[in-house]
Amino acid sequence: AGPLLGVHDLREHGGTRFARLHSEILQWEGAYRDTDEEKWSIELADALEWKRLQRLRIRAAGLRLSDFWVCEDSLRVFSHVLLFHVTQPHTATYTVAAPSAGVPPPTLLVLGKPSNGEAEAGASAAAG
Picture 1 (cartoon, rainbow, N blue to C red):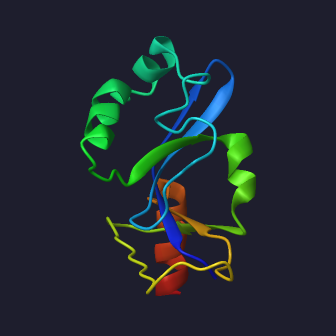
Picture 2 (picture 1 turned 180 degrees about the vertical axis):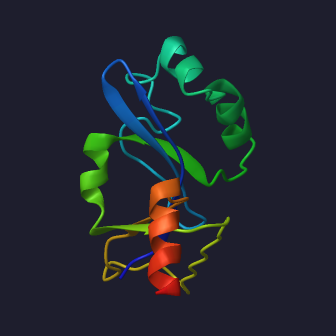
């Protein structure tokens, strides 16, 4: 398996669904990357609360940013999408020595809190 990515936010704007992903390893070069002038608009940046121009200045200074937005269609580049429900905040870390041509595609890891019904069902199953 390739590197794990975390999901920080999910939003919808203008009928398109977006996910804000986080990776300490990968740099997103697809649609909606910070430098994608064609896809980004002021309206979209405001809707996603994305300070894109500030981020471009940070990149120009040579600093690395580890989060980025992708649209739902872009999620097809991931080999696996794993969904985990957790009851408290969780952090996952993945490190590699050096990327190479033989590295498998990344895996998208989604961590989220269960709804009250799921939490109660899980507690009942554990108690029973």
